[in-house]
Length: 168
Length: 275
Image 1 (cartoon, each protein chain N blue to C red):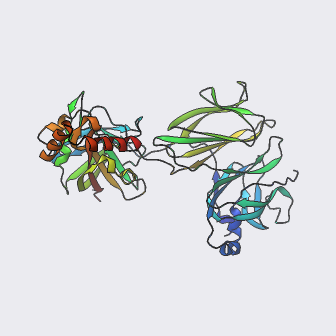
Image 2 (cartoon, rainbow over the protein chains, first blue to last red; image 1 turned 180 degrees about the horizontal axis):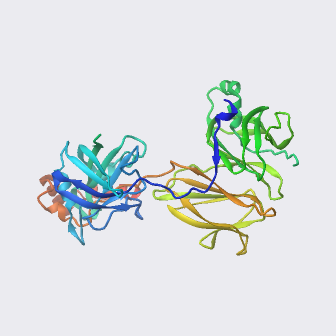
Image 3 (cartoon, helix red, strand yellow; image 1 turned 135 degrees about the vertical axis):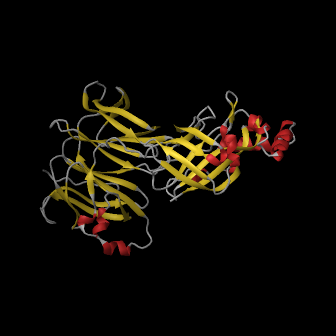
């Protein structure tokens, strides 16, 4: 290797980090869903933090955004809440393969996806590294609860997961 | 500048980049990931490994991209730019060992006494908990012991050249400054240091207090993130008893309610608590 092949760059303090625009709205016409999206992080128990109000869905802000070139954009929301009652994500179960999903981001652009998979996954078997993948193909994952509810076992048994691929 | 011989415990990879034959002979050895930071003020240098030029016109305050190098031991020499392979050494380090699998930053910097030295630092590339970033600070300046402060409060106290300290913090921005140890005399900063999620942000204090040219240099190593352990879904349970939930689910919920599957439930709860 010639000396010039090793590149060096100024080790300056990073200036303002330019992140891809955050999702602001999720629209799934086929299921009558149109809800605001809030940027969320990690809860104290290590799970993804979700907006307390089930009428708002959360976006995992440490993972990919729709304009990023790789990885899964993860949206997660409560199906219901003791305080607010049943939320619109109860209709996520009506989504079918082939349905169109639109995610609008803070810069005003609309990112369109087509549903490829709708399935229930026991929470204990949720493949989080696949779900929150940052380097694989661009995808959208919408997750809420599914399966039976058992308060003593921590609530709903399953996660309902909708996977969608970008529409070119 | 005086020549300083350094017996580095481990270090400086580049070498192999200039030694393809040695690399070929190395066989199935593990690679090390090596970056080099130039933190000696005022001296543009060339770097030689076993007599071959690896880096030329290497300027103060610059950092190389990480290079993968087979493990091994090498002789390193830093000269003034253009001095040639036989030129006088600004810093020399012989038999520098590069262990396989390690992620290392070799820093050419001033010792506490102001003389140039080479220090190999091993970078912590272990995973960071979900939502956190790692902040590493390294004292590589000709300066006495310092406190690294965040928001005016010491978080790493009494750091001396060439020590480092680190902590995993919630992702965000830290307003950091460097104060003389045990005092509120600010030597450097404050600066807004972004602690990005899943990234080890390594901040170097370099230069010379006597020459009033102390500066910060920053290196980042990304991809250290952990994912959240799961996604909670509902806290009410009302949706489970409306018509949208499949009938089988209601049946299970009833069974659960009367304790028929309580053993299974307890097991699930245990698994979740562990994850």
